[in-house]
Amino acid sequence: MADIQLGLMTRGQFPQGDDMQLRFEEMFEQIRLADKLGFSCITKGMHYSSWPLQDIQMVPYLSRVMAETKKMRLNMGIVLLALHKPLDYAELVATMDVLSGGRIIFGAALGYREVELKAFGVQKKEIVRRFTENIEAIKRLWTEDKVTMKGSFFELDEASCSIKPLQKPRPPIWIGANADPAIERAAQIGDCWYVNPHSRNETLYRQLEVYKRALDAADRPFPKEFPMRKEVFVAETREKAIELAKPAIGLKYKVYHSWGQDTVMPEGDNNLDLDWEELLDDRFVLGSPAEVCEQLLDLHETLGVNHIIASVQGAGMPQSQVLEALYMLGEEVLPNLKNA
Image (tube, rainbow, N blue to C red):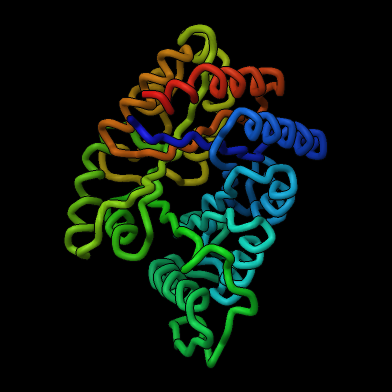
């Protein structure tokens, strides 16, 4: 029997001029429905200076979410960790883990946007070193009483994490990665590779072998929990699902291209400046409930992913449309995944 979890990403990004308080309330209506339907987690991403979109910041958002549900896990998916200091995030995430009753997933990745790097005083040539040292320091702060460690951009001198996480030995660490070297790094320092939603499935099949080889080289087992984020939309027919999802997904990928997301993607799959038909090809999960279920099961069988985070809501998508798609996912897709 396939053991597949289906989570939900509430992206929180909306066009300029939108009423963000109203959008916030709509997102919480989505969360309450997802909780009732049995979704595994709520995921929120992180970006700064998100023009031309408005965006809700991850930490206060997930801190508010934990009061809305007592069952779903809270996925920080993902923190741009190279922009931050390890003691700050060790204490912040540990606090959230305790307040939520041990439901935090700590997702982390490098980041790539110059506007963010410059705003935090970080040079692009430093980000790998900052990232890997921060991960090491956070692990130690969560599991040791006092930590002495001299990083390239910080120093811990008998430093302690003021509050330890509730999960033992620590919350799971998911490493987001697009390019092959980042996937190899995920195998070395993370609990799993958090598979990206931007690449074509054909690319991901190849990169799965990169990940497996890196795990073997590090003498580490394949993770028990292997997560992926994917654009997912369900409607009565595939044609209807594509029609309804196109405006929101199309806008988001135009923004990704303008931000330079392409530049950190693997060779041969590093252009998001595509027309809709090309963008759609082998990249998203769209269709009727039966078709979506089949596509998700295929990802499970071919990639081994067993925790799929569905991005359903998109910028400018009407609330009624989002709720209907969520209901169909929860009522007509999720039970079939669990019973596959």
